[in-house]
Amino acid sequence: MAQLIPLLIEEQQANDAGFTHFVSLGPNDLTETTADTPQDISLGTVPAGWIINKSMVVLVTPFKDASDAAFNTTAMVVGDAGSANRYVTSTQLNENGTEITLPKYNATSYQVTADTEILANIAAMAAKSLSDIDTGEVHIFLQLIDTLILSDLQSPAVIA
Image (tube, rainbow, N blue to C red):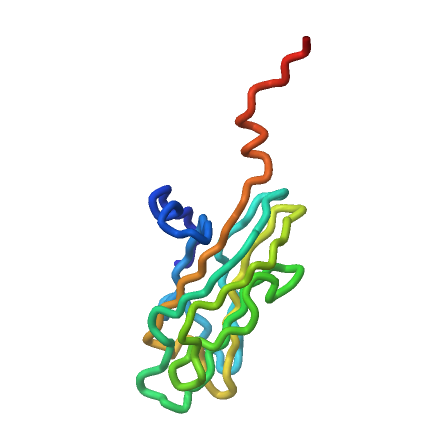
């Protein structure tokens, strides 16, 4: 089951890009059995006021249906109810298509005004079911910023 998890402090310090959260998606997350039907996968909810500052997609292992070379498209976007591709625009993950070979980075910053569910949408292909994909792994990295944490950590102002 896909779940957005915080990176360890050591992992956050090891990446100069400042990513704070991570999720891995693979074949077990693709459960849609109806042909030509896309699937939304919930990655988690970001609290109101937080900023989703940037994102990156790394295709670790291309997706494919090992028994069907004609299954040649598995595109993914990541967004929310307000915009399906707000954080990650269409990204091809399928080995039999033109899958990404380098990490895909997006530096678009967005502050959520209400608790917001982050969704990965996996597009469908005519006459193919997403549940037939049996190979693949993609990592999604996000930099999430709690806009109040720095202020909350400050000492109260002293009035002279």
